[in-house]
Every structure is written in C-alpha cells, then in structure tokens.
Length: 221
Image (cartoon, helix red, strand yellow):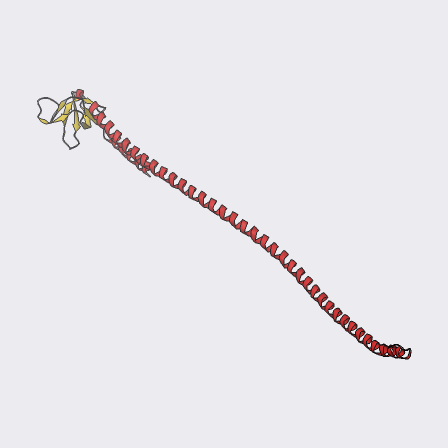
C-alpha cells in the first residue's frame, strides 16, 4: 500500500513537472525581478540564489525571461542568470531531504527487523517450551509404561498366587479327607482291638477256671 501511494504521488509530481516548467536562480546571486524586460523597469523583488521559479516564456528579441514566483509574483529576469537544474545549495537541500527520508525508512526497516527478531525470539521460546513439554510427556509416558508393566507383572503374579492358593486348598482338602480317613481307620482299629481284648478276656475267663479245675484234680495246689 505504501509503495502504491508513492507511485501515485510520483506520477502526480511528474505530471505537474511536465505541465509547469521551472527555472532556478544561479548560485551565489541576488537576482532582481522586474516589471519589464529591461533595467529601466521597476524591481518588484530580489530573488535569492537557488530560488525556483515557474517558467512562463523566454523573449526571443531580449535577454530576459518571463517567470512567476511560488507566491504568484510575475516579472522578468535576465535569462543568463537562470538554470534548468537546481543549484548546489538547492541540491544540498534536496539531498538532505532525501537523507532524512532514507533515515526514516531505515528506522522503519530497523523497527520491522526488531519486530521480526522479537517474533523469532518468541518462536524460539515457544519451541523451547514445547520441547520441554514434549520431554515431560515422554517421561510421563515412560512412567505410565513402567507402571503398566508393573501392573501386568503384579497381575500375573496374582494369578500365579491364586493358582497356588487353589492348589494348596486342594491339598488341604485332600489332607483333611485323609486325616478324617485316618481317624476313621484308627477308630475302627480301636474297636477291633477293643473287641479282641473283650474276646480274649472272655476266653481267659473260660479257660482259666478250667485250668484250675484240672490242677485241683491232679493234686496241684
């Protein structure tokens, strides 16, 4: 947009320059602007060196040129004291203006550069922050993975312990059943032993008296 405006202004200035032809008072002079083309005419004002004038016409049969000042004063000046180009002083002014314009543009470019540098710095800071967040997420992921692996290991261990517990329960049930069987067998054995003792006692009760009777009949005391 700025460049487009500059082009439009340059075009307007070029058109104006083509429409109005200018002349400049030569360097280090004070040139009188007269009411007519000759020294006998009254001086309207004195023109300063480097002052630019609007060209009206150059008289063919005279050494004078008709000009007009920026303030609208119209008169005649000697043609030999006019120049088509700005004098050194005017060129210096133009150069200074151009230098100031370039300084302004340079300051704007420097400001834009600083803004871009700040954006780059901000982008770098954002990149560093994202890198740190990525590293933190990676650490969290590794920790979660480790926890998951531990959880899987614990789950596997729990399954093994459950199976082991089931085996132990089965063994306990088997031992309990075996113990019950042993108790039952011992009880039966005790009954057998008791019955045998009873029978032995009965037999002894029957046999011993008979033996005593035999001893008595045989003369045994």
